[in-house]
Image (cartoon, rainbow over all chains, first blue to last red; front, side, top):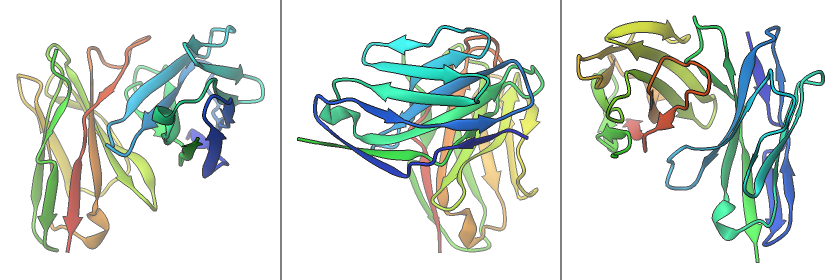
Length: 117
Length: 115
């Protein structure tokens, strides 16, 4: 079974600064997808960024980028120029590319990000 | 296009009762997945439905069940409620069944409290 580990329960960053959230995962599969989801206090889960395991290039979405190290099974999220609206719970998630289980997301325990002035 | 909707948003039930939660996916989405979120266990996959068929199931007891209708709307049912069933139940829909680059869109969740 796959597991996702987020070792930072809480992180804090000053507005306009950069912060990196860590995520490691364990899998025996070679083809899969990794995600970062944001869950603000409103509870609505929002997809921040997605990475396909077969792609070597790290994904980027505006101020959000990832550092994907497949051999190390590491998938960190970097938020640049942090904004107050970035304050939320961030979840790292894994999804298999196996069509039999491809719908299932396996989540980490989350990192609560605080953004201060 | 309207997002994923879940009803009710809040629910209070007593131990031993049963409850039904509803999820309406984004128009055109045929896959619906359910997740349970608790402080202790985090986010856990319950099951997934595609074209009215359960295609994937998480490790939950048989008290948790679901179904999907021909219009892709889905319901999940929990019978004989226990205190530990108190949780936020999230529904997610996607266009296809987890194919490449297929994104899952989440609803706002139903907060269930069992007393």
